[in-house]
Amino acid sequence: MDAELVQRSEKIEKRLKLLAESLDHHGKAGQIKKIEAKMGQPDFWDDNESAQKTVGELKALKAIVGPMNELSSSVEDLSVLMEMADEDESVAAEVGQELSRLENILDDLELKALLDGPNDSAGAILTINARDGGTDANDWADIMLRMYSAWAVNQDYKIQLLDRHENEEAGINSASVAIRGPMAYGYLKGEQGMHRLVRISPFNSEGKRQTSFAAVSVAPEIDDSIEVEIEEKDVRTDTFRASGAGGQHVNKTDSAIRLTHIPTNTVVQCQSERSQHQNKANAWKMLRAKMARLEEERREAETAAKYSTQARTGFGSQIRNYFLHPDQRVKDARTGHYVGNFNSVIDGSELQGFLDAFLRWRAGGKTAVTADED
Image (cartoon, rainbow, N blue to C red; front, side):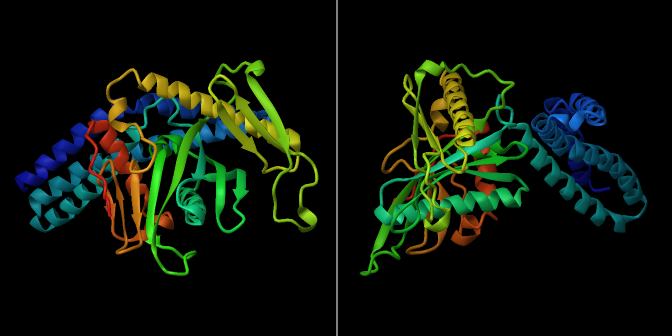
C-alpha cells in the first residue's frame, strides 16, 4: 500500500474524531430520537406553528447527523478496501478515489462546524436597499433579490416576501425576505454590507459605464421562545397604504405597518399581507430579529476579531465587487474569492462559494484583501 494513501487515511480518521466532538455528534443523535418520539404523539400537530418549528429543528439536526453517520460508516469500509489493496495493487486507484470523496465530505462538515454562533441555526431576515447609482442601483437591488432567492431555492429553503417597495422607473427601492432552512442565518450573515456593480448602463442612452451600489443587512429570525427585550413604549407604530401594481388588487386600506424602535432608531416595515394584523405580526418579528442582530454585534465587538470582519459602509467600502464591464467577474473584497462568470453567481449557483469562503476567512482571522478599484 502506498505510504501517502495510508497517511491520508490516518488523517481522515483523526479529522473525523475531532469533528464528531466539535459537532457533538452523539448529543445531536440523541436529540433526533427525542424529537422523533415527540412527533409520534397524536397531538403533535394540534399547534401547527410549534410543530413546524420542531420539524425545522429535526431537519437541521439530520443535516449534520446523517452525513456524519454515512462518513463514519464509509471510514470503516475504507479499512477493508485498504486491506484488499494490499493483496491487489489494482484496487489502489479505487482507494485514492474513495479517500478524495471522504475528504470532500469532511471539508463540507467542517464548514458546518464553523456555524457555531448563538443564532447561526436560525432562519434569516434579509433586507436589500438601493444606494448610490440612481435607477441602476434600483435595478441592481432587484437583481440581488433574485440572486438570494435563487440561492435559497437551490438550498431547498423556504422564502417569504415580507416587504417590497417598487421604484417607479425600474427595480426596487428596498425589499425584505425571510429565508428559512438549516443554518440560513449562519451562511447569510456574512453578506451584510455594500455590494458594488460595474456595467454598461441599460438606462443610459449614451452607453456609459455605471457604478451602482446596494446595501444588504441580515438578521436572525428569532422565535418566541428566545427573549429579546423590547419595551412597547419605545416602539412607534405607523400605518400606511401598501403599494401595489394597481388595478382591482390595489390596496385601499392602511394595512402596511412601519415600526420604529426609538432608542436605536431601528426601522422595519411590512406590507406583504392584506391584513394589517398579519403585517404587524411580521413587522414585530422583523424588529425582534434586528434587535437580536444588534445584541449579537455588541457581543462580537468585545473581541478584536470583530474588527477584522466587520462590514464597512459607504462608497469604496464594498464587501464584494460584481463586474460586467470591461470583463465578467465577481470578487469578494475580504476573502479574495473569485468567480469569472457573473451570471453563475447572479443565478445563485455559485454564490455558495462566497459564503463558504467567508466562513473559512472569519475562522482563520485573516486580514482583508485589497478590493478591485476598476
